[in-house]
Image (cartoon, rainbow over the protein chains, first blue to last red):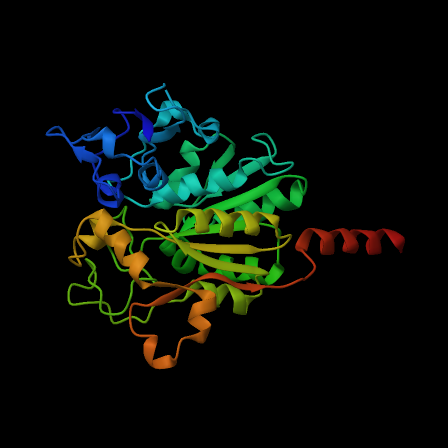
Length: 69
Length: 274
């Protein structure tokens, strides 16, 4: 399954809630304290990160066709 | 680029908001706009957001409705005024644990008593966050605050029981962890004609969590996950399992009663008929 991410860097405060609640360890915090997608292949597009992001900084959606955008 | 429909309810040029990293207020604010989004007859032009003072009450500044950021503890009186003058408007109150149960404690119970058609969402972070972490009436027993360095000895309010006893006709609780449940609790509150009260437990990692060594924001949310018990399961729980820290969430109380606008309309009719 493929997932598409939108990360609004200007909103992210690096609190780590999305990283902690991701069941597949897809996300990580970079040295500047912003979230980034470390391993997109593992993402199952469950949306737990988006659901609990207090800053509306991360959005994720399933991409239907494998490899298609 | 993914953009959600509820974003239109935010004043996006004001984001990012000023809440601390990991603060649960952002989650509760999003739950409110998601509850409003798609609700029949509720638009940005006929919905009013009223808030008091405190971290929670900053939410009105980020929400693109007609908004009113009022005096400390006085959000419910301002909202009562709006609802009486313009019963056609939908009025939502955002308040905090200190704002609602301490400074505005009297207003809160009398709003419940009148059963005025408001939806009050209390962001309960267990502390006065904005002013530096003083103990609020909802700081749990034994928890530390700047005004209680050895632990609070004041027994906390259960705001839901308070609302029910005072006469609110819809009383529910949820948490920042249970986002979809929180949205549902708020939406059902919006549907209720009368005083609806929803307590949203939110994490305050800065003023409350740090002082009480509760760990990072995600850990505070995991605590909510592990300790919140759905009302239906809570009712079946034997008393010895209802240990300290465990708390029920869900719909606690719902009743039919005449709302204040309707009662007032009837008074006007009676006065005119003589």
